[in-house]
Image 1: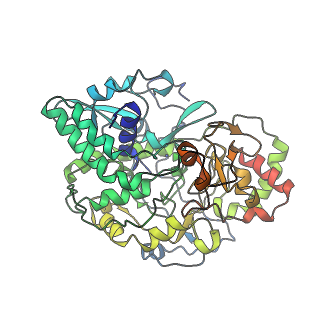
Image 2: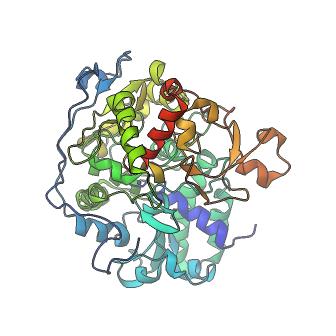
Length: 507
């Protein structure tokens, strides 16, 4: 088996999948392209629109009872933190405590381009890529791990934006074999111990996180695989699974939401999982390597600060020209048709924090149904573990309607990334069934449709000419990848939709 730079980086990226879930012109003393509000750690919960029928019932969510009306998710207290310190910890601290010896890692890669470096880094991390963290382990050797930014930094308008979900990740390679093969590169017992621990974990979870489509994220399945191998009380790793891992369930594809939504959200994730203390949920990013409660408590001390930084991030401004008169008309369309679920925007913004039932929203239901119906023992594990002391995994049967700040930058859309443009979100007939943004047009932006320029295919994966084309086709006919539902925009006229698109660019 050939172990090269690409396969090693693919293996390392597994360390970041549970990441805290999302312009570099500033000096090294501060975070890039962010607006800090040190006094705004506990964002007040804004009321839903007056016409929204929303039971304000925590018990409904905690008991996981299906209801047919949107459910309001109330705010809960958050631990205070220092956002500036949070940024420094995010890009420097070893919260993922296992990885590849730096000597081996650097043999397999070349110099890091300046475009992949971040300000505010310290020591050896100054010259590391934004998604890599170097630290000294207990055996006094340098280790490289992957940090939260592998999933929670992305490129838009030609620049790297911290907090933008990485929608170009490739989890189609099997990382298990290369991880095990890396042990042959170890020199001495200390390097072998480091590689053995890391490679065992990667090889264990690899079957549950290897996707067949570029651009989507398998974090939900990784969570299941890791929990299954840990003792809920001690967090000790078990080579054999302690909980049964479903073998007949497809890997659910996810789109990584932007971190700047966190200042408004009372539940962190799509299905209302991630209640209570957000910092405690975020630090679950360390689960691949954290083997004791004492180690978890040490890492937990960092995360109120990291959460405060995440809550300080502002979305990037739309880089193109905006027809302000058209956008003003679009605002009226939005407030009449969209604000009930997605809130209002501007200085006096509101965000209702609503869980929308599946029967209403109608988007692909694989994630919601599985979270609600099939995850009981995993929910119990989390809620009875160290992590559940302050946080709760409480899925609902539906999806949370997200804030729309910076929505122009967050394509593709829906929880599974099944719709490449906002034009398709608000007109279901404009959604391609088979498409790719990675064939001939990767990274090209469509300012008219607001989203990614993409190639449309007449066939799905089964008709692909070769393996490369196959993995790059987003096939909405497959379970978990559907692009149905959210039909509210179909009732608008073409003129109203054009006005709405213009307004959405301003958010």
